[in-house]
Length: 350
Image (cartoon, rainbow, N blue to C red; front, side, top):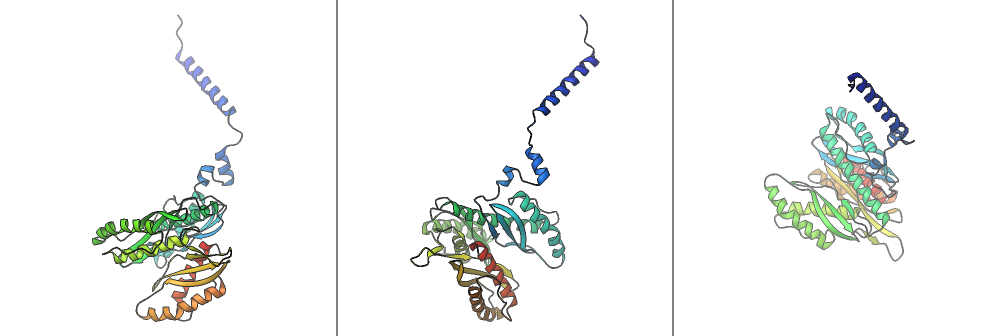
């Protein structure tokens, strides 16, 4: 029997491999999903689906995320449920932070648009800014999702995250799930921690969560021994209810007609002298009422706030937008007021 030569076997195997590759190439589809992404910069369907769907259009501002070096707040521009633009309306500044911000924020903006979600990589050398950016970005996406759900019908469950409420012992932030106009779930995403706060939080937050679901609104009793946590919880809960679709506790009929009055709370704007947060009532596309639910206080701030806030409220109603003049002698309060007012208008769709 004639033996097979090793070289001949190798040649035959190589020929078979080449034939197989040619056959596979001949079966390749005419259009390659990956090629479309490379050529036109379009996201494949799986990635594009991460953004809130349902035809969300316009600007959505996320909650301000506090970091060790300052606040980060992201605003998204949405078109048909997709992120078309991302920008940081607040970012750490001063000293070395200026350089870090100018280097990292543009890259984070691009990443948000590319990913269509908050699952983006941190920028090297900007760990705190990146973490704050992602947190505020997720908040904006939550708000866009709630808005999308509102257009699809009130029977769907919507998740809404309230603004962060600052307390003496740390921030409190509440997220609720609303279905059929009722709160079906409440949870604290942030609560005071460290030392004795751990025990107070573990004791009070579950009870506050239960109370929120039972009451269906923010009119709940404070937990004994957890005064500050309870107050912060109720404040953030009310903010979440304000953002929730109609039937979530924030919309009231403005008379017997079809026009509905909607109350919306803007994100808290951090200033040199304390946070400023604005709540507006909108009816028929106009601001009918404006109020500051937070403003600088203590010492001389009390006088400045009592003098400036009523004038800013009046200006907001008169202008119907955030393009209002600063009150003389209240530069920081005015700037914070306008920022929070714009956030409220973004949420209201105005």
